[in-house]
Image (cartoon, rainbow, N blue to C red):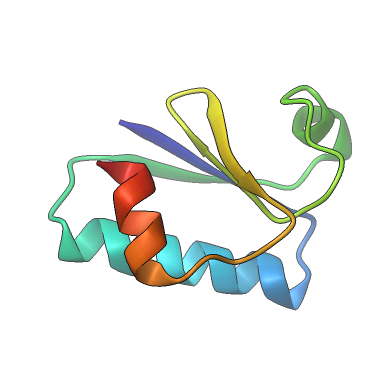
Length: 76
């Protein structure tokens, strides 16, 4: 599973990364989590507002930090 956190480094971006890592850990997922910070790379996903969570190439959420339980559902 490929997970990408899209964001330029704002507090919400850091929070989404933290919560996603914890959710993946709790689910014991075999995954690769990558932080994407370059605007051109973020826009390539069609995302205009960050933070965003991308799972296996599909944008699951953009513009907010969902609860960890919601992130777990997005990852399963």
